[in-house]
View 1 (cartoon, rainbow, N blue to C red):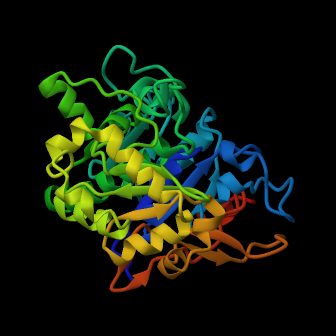
View 2 (cartoon, one colour):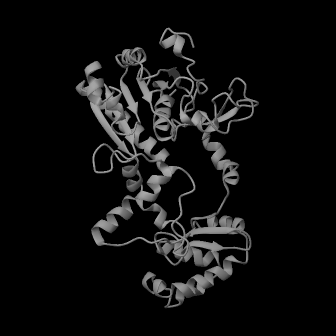
View 3 (tube, rainbow, N blue to C red):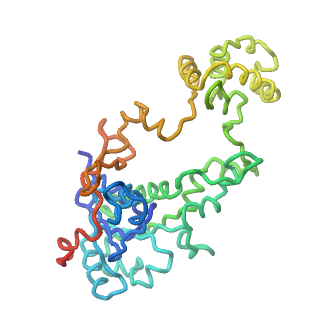
Length: 385
């Protein structure tokens, strides 16, 4: 099995999505993740809609999603005795991860300076909304707040109905991936230098770097992005969204080869000889007419038909699917993006995410279920559960 982080111990003081998803990926790669939670309450995501059989057991779906393979320890960090127990665990750890609002860790006596006094050769990773410097660094935020801040909402939807939030907490999960990458990288340097490292991961930074090409285009040229609905960022007149007899079709015919093959697939070969559409510059000048011709042809078949037809001609295209539709696709099933795990009390086995890449053709999946609140206290703290 691919377990490159076997032997690495991580103290995880994070909750909700971004932080727990970061440490979840590290757990999948073999790290021992000690999830520190508040007694009786635990991670905020433990409370909410839960699978059948787990109601009122602090095992909500949002918690189950990114906490398999971890161990749960309950400590009240405002109590000196519990804080002392945490510091004892830190002495045995390689990584310390927190996602408190900036300033909170310092008040608790858990700043990076405090942790380095306990153990010099440790990675201290902070995950926050805006980072630990700058004029608004102390502000709290969640995914949808950062979406409003970073500009993505003004580019989502059409010019008539923007702004719109992206329909998933993608900044949270991308921040988790960013933090996991940072921690894995820092572990290599820690092994070499035996010196503590401070990592500062910000949701706002991550959200902007997810739009790196747009950000640099604006800064370098002054270009101002606008909401373009379902159209392609390439602005190619032969790319974008097309209504069909049934369903919406997304098409990407950006280069000359793709444009020519699209015309052939639609039986519109005569357009290749039409001077209005023979070169890209002319196509852009006459894009309205060209799209009308394409649109008329796409209405003669379903999105499913055209997806298969354009595949024959190697033109990227896809029928717009619902989540349930794509999850039933054989392609997704073959990639094994989830693994079912048995959880005591649950009416059925439950799906957990796997690592986001395969290794030697194999999927890396969690081995154990998400922990009950405080279930590892007796083993790791020598106290009753």
